[in-house]
Length: 314
Ligand SMILES: NC(=O)c1ccc[n+]([C@@H]2O[C@H](COP(=O)([O-])OP(=O)(O)OC[C@H]3O[C@@H](n4cnc5c(N)ncnc54)[C@H](OP(=O)(O)O)[C@@H]3O)[C@@H](O)[C@H]2O)c1
Image (cartoon, rainbow, N blue to C red; front, side, top):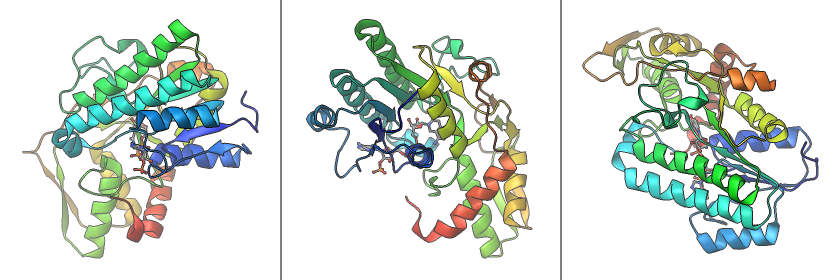
């Protein structure tokens, strides 16, 4: 178990995941949390990262800093995605090893799994088939991070673990329509349609693909649980264990926002992978399960959006 006064570095503490981990650590009474903004420590800078770790010598590291984005951003800047993520990972993981960090948690993503993986997706399906092309650069960089953690454990005896969350959402999410994920994008679209009195909202595809969503505070709890209890090089999925169609998700959000117009599905647009559900039995066997329902999570996220809509990032 992490001592309450252990020095814990949360890399990416202003992001969706990092800010939730930071909030949880504070709430749980951890007193020595270390953070740096990008302006103070650019994780792309090898020497600065190495110096930072040597000087601060953190005991634990949550690696939640990454270049993250939706389909459009991944399509437009694939080189940036692979370059920045590989660089952040090599800098933080290698410097953690050099500085004697006791344990590091690396965050990957469900896109590391093969495009046509059997559902629900078990951890062992990693590298068993071809990846989805649209975010391959990002996925390959995340796989490299996983393998780095495993190989540092093997060669240097470190304790670097890797967790693969399903789709995340919650307060602090990116609501910029240019590069946001589906759930915050739907909140924004329905909110704007309601405000502007539009008769309908047009959404891409048929609405039949199914996706799994985990609320960000649940994810943070899972990360802290793993930091305290999981000591294996093999990756571990974090999810809720059930999925929902995009159509059902859109209806849930529409209702929460109170938009009364119509949803039109533009079926000429692509649907993407039909289903993406993580098998979370390994995490359950370890003793952790999510507790926030999608309805509750959407409600809290919408409340946050209303309070912060004039100040959201992107
Ligand atoms: N969001 C999801 O649905 C999802 C799902 C599965 C897995 N994940 C994983 O969770 C992790 C975090 O994702 P997120 O959604 O929290 O992303 P996010 O909200 O975009 O946050 C990323 C954080 O990383 C920081 N960062 C990026 N480049 C940096 C650099 N060069 N130097 C210093 N800081 C840098 C950003 O700093 P600034 O604040 O300065 O930009 C930001 O605070 C990623 O590894 C991602 O793969 C996310």
